[in-house]
Amino acid sequence: MAKAIVKTRNIIVHSKSSAIPLATTDDAQHYLAKIKATEEQILQSAKQAVELLDLLVVELSAIDPDEALWLESYLVGKSQPNLEAK
Image 1: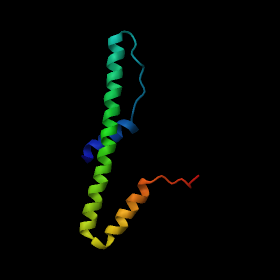
Image 2 (image 1 turned 60 degrees about the vertical axis):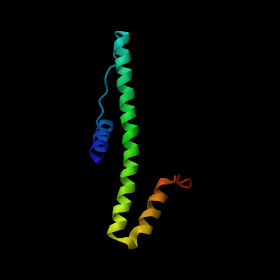
Image 3 (image 1 turned 90 degrees about the horizontal axis):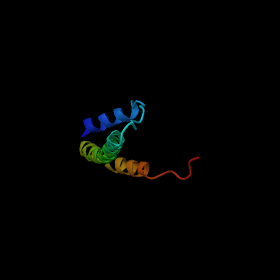
Image 4 (image 1 turned 90 degrees about the vertical axis):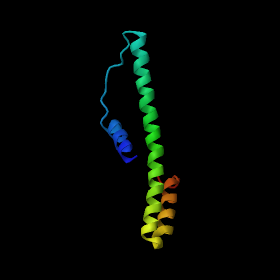
């Protein structure tokens, strides 16, 4: 799971610009299909990253049960948007 997340991160961070191939409709359709596949990969990796964080909380809580409440409250706080920040 972590490898897929890192791979997707690298696709995002190290993306290269390229010309849009519009010579034929097949080229354009292939290009759009590639973009859609990349978007789907990014969405799946985002979901996996959240699942991985949940697993991390469980494992850290098992290592040190005294920290379990802090870990859970920290992650809940991080998942909520800070509306007061400017």
